Length: 210
Image 1: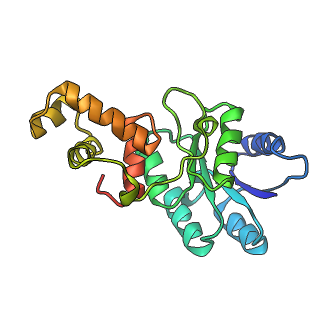
Image 2 (image 1 turned 135 degrees about the vertical axis):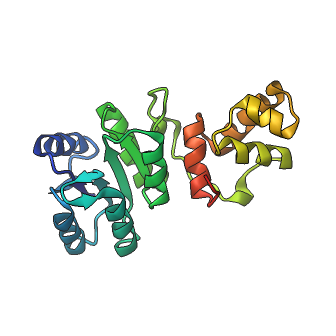
Image 3 (image 1 turned 120 degrees about the vertical axis):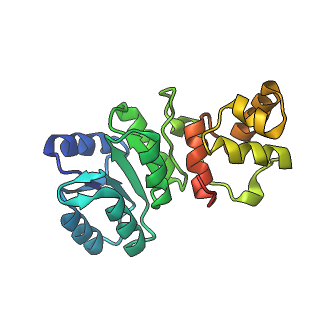
């Protein structure tokens, strides 16, 4: 197995490399400190299994780089590891083609869980409760046809990802707040998620307007 860590801070990069070696004793971890070095290493190592990418690199827009790498090397999954831990950054990363997102404040076990999930072909999303999502098994992005949702639940989902509260959704659809909560619980189970921020990310993967 061969991985690439793209991170400009040497101490962080070295720490991630040491952590990643826990995945397998035979693992090969390459390191890049900037965008140009990353592109060069990926070009020369087409057998890479995974790229771990920091969004804040010198002289580079991280999201633009992510999109560029996704276009140039579509077969290599990219896991974003970033200090930008807001829901918007998570959403933009997944929309740009990342296979997962790990906040830098996470425990090393979360990073390892994320790598395993992405290497298994899944999507790793940060869990607001602090429980590594990968421990629940790989989260594969559904298609619109895969969702086991009624017409009413789809309408609730549309409003949920737009940021409306349960009460606001109920007011718009003529439902009680309790009924909306039931619909939201079913939506979360159907998507295999546990929070509204993860629902937004999944909606983006489905091509919905968020």
